[in-house]
Image 1: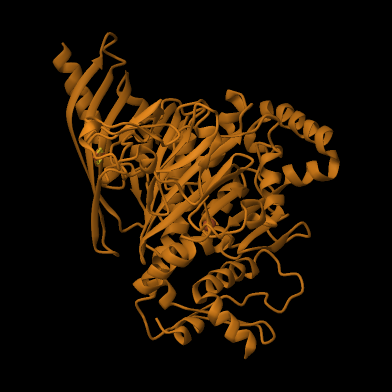
Image 2: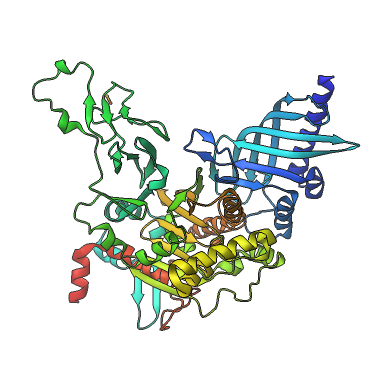
Length: 166
Length: 429
Ligand code: FES
Ligand SMILES: [Fe+2]
């Protein structure tokens, strides 16, 4: 039973990564629930990530999908100087495990990730890496991401941090 | 470097309206060395905010102007800056970025210092000669440390003026930021650390540049307009000024096109927030009268405290410092500053404002960073020697999209670099 849930979760995580790396923005957005929370904490005092997006500083925080839609709109507009359409990313997701699958249709999943980033204009590659926590909702045929928390372990950001860099 | 070369790195001719900076100032290591010696070692440099160390024993260790330091509140309640290097043989005595401690024990040979920096423990002290005197081994301190309304600064030059004198006209603008709170401003937990592959002075220019807003951030402004923010007041209005505040400090102040948690409501804040924001405005009027309340709440300001502290009081308040590692690479730290008394609803709104625009993951900062890096790459064309900073130079009242505030920075930078002897001979000439 748990294996089946785990496979289902991993498949969704990999699919999300593929949408980001292949710049299939609309499909990526569609993975998120209306009320999805998307959170990249900052670090406080270097020891631990911030723990409360409402009173402490984050790197990115949206408490609904509209925020993510704005970001995609910005990337797709082609007019944001920083959202270089040429930037290539490659997500590696591993160590996928269930934190809580008491309700198999709303599993809480942890994983480790690395994103390799290549900026052809600067001829430079770099990477971010860290941990994900996903809260997923499997309803009918359309699985949704309800919450995604991204801990960036190398949090000295190189110039810019976009939703597809982590 | 020859005085004559140094003197010509900035061309400043107010009568003719010519102001140019030689791009070598952005690319050459010699300039960075001079800046370390003549700018960062002589000016008052921002270290941190008293709200980051609220209780006795609270400390933060960080790098300021390239030096590891400890910001610590002693048992006596006083906030001090200690140089984070053991007086024995050099190790960092504090390796935690933050915490609370009565003492700092060096991990290398276990010398122990109290929170005032005094040496209070030496293992096997009897092995030292009678000449060994603990008093001479207190942790180093910057020549001067002082604070203004919670902002703590240090200065490595004993002969520098007092902080209040140094801050000059910037005090008025720090007050406008601090008066937003009835109980004091507070830095919230967490900082954004990012690096930029560009010379640090490009970020100074950019942080107070009213000329780049619309072209560089067109996506952001379109986003604002889309979400119902009225931009017709624009950035060119009567409520705007660009000022030289003395000692290299400068500010631009303008009618805010953005909503402000204190206290300018806009539709994106939602109807629920309206009454709260209006109440805040009413309180400001009560405390300061309508005119100052208007200025605090409805105008925004980008403030440079020379050389490397930016306080942008815009849709949120960001405190930003940066330091060059190499001529074409800097490290930046940014914090969120807000009234200590703010409740969760208000701080949520403030942080949302902050993150939407500011920081490496925001809508605007990345575009700025991209432009700074782009300038730095452009400098590889050494045949193009000069950057032009003359906009609005012959106007009596330059607007915020002129470049007076940027010239203010460069003039001070140049004065500090060329040094008094060259300045004297220039006057004589
Ligand atoms: S270096 Fe600190 S005790 Fe020796
Ligand atoms: Fe900008």
